[in-house]
Structure formats: C-alpha cells, structure tokens
Length: 426
Image (cartoon, rainbow, N blue to C red; front, side, top):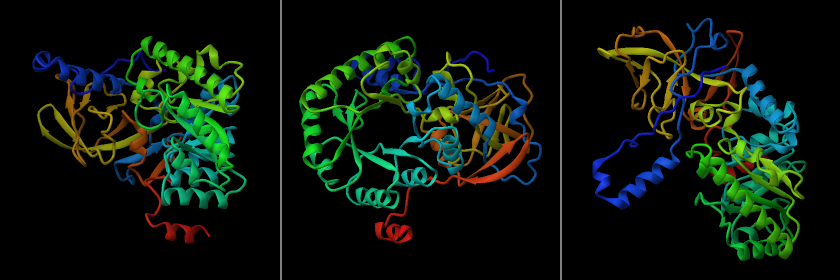
C-alpha cells in the first residue's frame, strides 16, 4: 500500500501580487488552477518493481507490470459490483494490444477510444462494442465506415452534436451517441439545450440510424478537490437525468448513458440516480488501468490501485551541486499536465524540475546523497496516457525479469492517406 497522498500544486499556483491588481487575470488564474492535475509527491519503493538486470536496456524505457495491470482491472470490476459490462473503458491510456486483450480476457468487452487506430486495435483484440468518442468528419468518417465494414460483428458507434454530422452516416450500420457538453466546453451540445438534443434524436431516426444514447464526459472536475468534486458531479448527474427524461418524453428511449472518466469514477459509484435506471449506465475511466501520480491522488479513498506502468531512466549527469540529470525529458515522460512531470519511486529526496526534450534535472534535497551517474531510477509519470504514447514498445516485467517486448500498438495515428490505409485493410 502507498502512503497517504500528498499534493503538489501545479505551476503558477502561488499568490501573485500582480494578479491582485488585475481582477480579470485573477479569474483566469483561478480557472487554470481548477483544471490542473494534483499529484502525489512520493511513492514508496516496492520490490515488485525491481528489474533484476538492465545491462541491455536502452533508457528511457516503458515498463509494464502485468500482475499489477490485472489487479487494477479486477479492482475496477469489483467496484462495479462484479459486472464488467458496466465499464466502457477508454483505451486512449491502454494503447497496447496486450492490455486490450487482458481487458477482454477479464470480461471487459465495451470500449471507448479517440482515434481510428485505437478503434482498429479494439476490433482486432476482441471488443464487442466500441464507441469512437471523438467527432469524425471527412476522411476520418470514411475510415470509420471502412473499419465497420471490416468488422461486422463489432457494434461500432460514433459521437454527433449537429445534423450535418448525423447525415454523413446515412445508410451506415454505425450507431449514434449524442455528445452532451456538461460544462467542459470541449465538444458536445450544451446539456441545457434540450430542444436541440431532442431534435437531433429525431434527425437520427429520419436518417435510418440507431440512436444508442448520450455521452457525458465530466472531465472538468479532475482538478476539483473533494468533497466539492462529488457535489458538483452529482449536481451535473441530476441535470443529466432530467435531460434523459425530456428526451424520452419528446423523442424516444435512451438505451445507454456514458459518464465518468477516472477522476469522477467514485462520484458515479455514489450517485443513487444511476442505480436501477431504465437505461444502461456505463462509466469510462481509462487511466485507472495503469494509474499515475495524478489518478492516485484523485482516488485516495479507493484502495487497491497501484501503478502498472513506470518509466525506467538512468542518471546521466551531475551538472552542479544538488542537481542530477536523468535521460527522461518530455519526449519520454509527458509534460502536458505540468511540472513536475513525475516522481521518483522510493526517492522522496529527488524533486523533478522542468524537463527539456531529452533531459530531466532532479533537485537533490539538502543533506541527502545524490544518485551516481549510471544509476537507474523508476519514474511514476504525472500523466501516463501521453507518456505511453511516447514509446514504440513496452517491456513486460514479471518477477524481476523481462518476459516480452510488447508493441504500443495504437501509438499516434493511422496513415494520413485514406486510400493507403483502405488498401492495407482490404
């Protein structure tokens, strides 16, 4: 078990005298602060993460621990009352065919993804039902059609938020989820615009398409501390239930409602309105399969989760007293969630500083012994999803030994030319 989470503020969260004289700037800073991901400041060493021999390992390297992965999956299913059908896991994190096959083997058959490459991977690995939870237009929509034709046994659905998007799927076998904007303001129809949502359900029927349900990603609460996070999420879920009632009164049955990434997963578990609902309610946490320094801080009350993926790095320099540098810059450990980008497992005396492309300086606590050049370090990323996407492959580590090399199958995107990809899959 890990110690009680401690939190680090994101960069720019200290008081700034300048902002006190500029109220509008203060509002902007407050908004940025609310969306930043807090993270653990330390995580104790666990012998299960040991890699007995690294003489032949090029660093930085992505390490995947299959036993921890399986335990994280099982814990999630357990929290869903043992029913894997309630989990539409987002594989933007998983990325590896190995991980998707592990999910399928443990009974998870419903998936959500963000790219056509992830959609293809899910279909190839045994998925029964996949939602491409990203607006698809133009050649991207054509590619989805080609994948759907290639895998007729898989229920494939897409998101729509306007009539033009719906009409492009006419005469298609794909299902349609309407994308509801709960306040994140990234995609979707404002959840208060009931009239438009009802009209879009009618548009789906008019084009001979299957209305699958509503997609509601409340990711804006990731940076909100408890208990406010649950209070705000539950308030949104009440509005969502009202929306479902209005749609059913004015347009037809809502088959499925999808909510909750990793930060609001506990909020959905505690919301009474989702129990015994007339629709299928599924949650879609993805980060939870691997966990990272952010998700472990966001889920302090859900025991049983551990990091399943780490980055192995080596110390390559000691440029000055109190500073060492390892070979895991932001081209290895993603910096999208802020600085620090990671923590060093078992080394609370080492504080990661701002990285460059291939370098990660670490401040050594005063009085502590600095690691030597050549020494290996295990890094727990702040945000694991884009970190996995930085690597071509992962080393599968079991009982201290490298068992296999697994390709990061859905890294990046498919070929940019549609005709090339169509020929490849025909």
